[in-house]
Image (cartoon, rainbow, N blue to C red; front, side, top):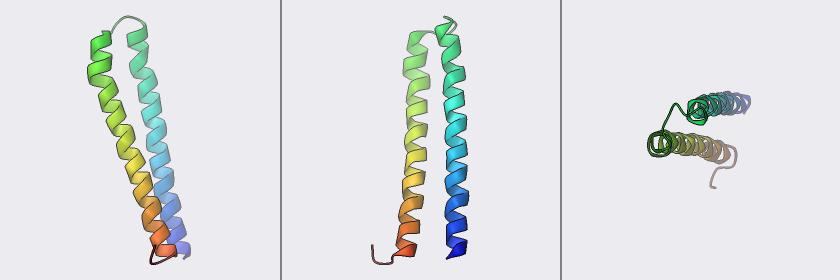
Length: 77
């Protein structure tokens, strides 16, 4: 059971770290847009869809990790 807990915490922490990196990337990507160095269309048509897709993927990873851990702890759910 301890190994399962360690596994869960390790991957949860890694997903959290990736999410933090994504947030920093979003901040850095919007700075040139605010300064007028990127067009609004590039921001809305290229960057934001990619960022949204990455956020959905990270959420899916986290949700699946939770489901697997929950099933392992309480089989039959």
